[in-house]
Length: 114
Image 1 (cartoon, rainbow, N blue to C red):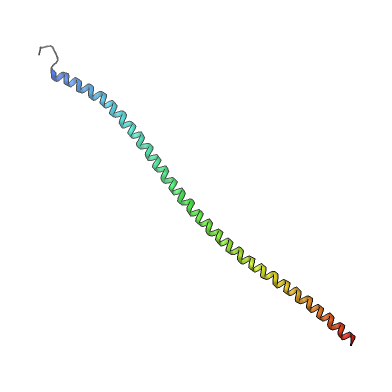
Image 2: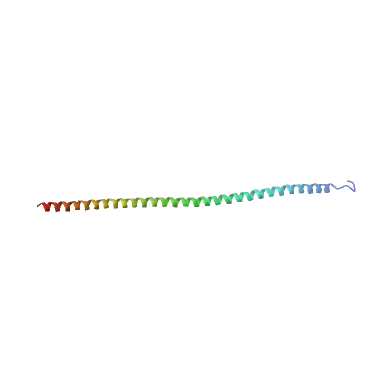
């Protein structure tokens, strides 16, 4: 080696420094991209969890609505039976009153003819 020329170690150090500089930039870019993807994935997971919660709420509301519909159908059937009975009781009462009036009229006519 000559006195003014850089030593082998110095050249190696320069090569290592250049290599670290460019690799650091690539590493930082990769880390940045990984962080961005990681953030996106966290957002997607949070959105998926929120969707699951919304689906659970919707399922619970659906079950309550089904139960209410069953209860409404049962109440409607009971009410229908009640008014049907009420209708036939009224018809029976009207028929009884008409028969009673006819009986009274016939009785009066028979009593008058004697």
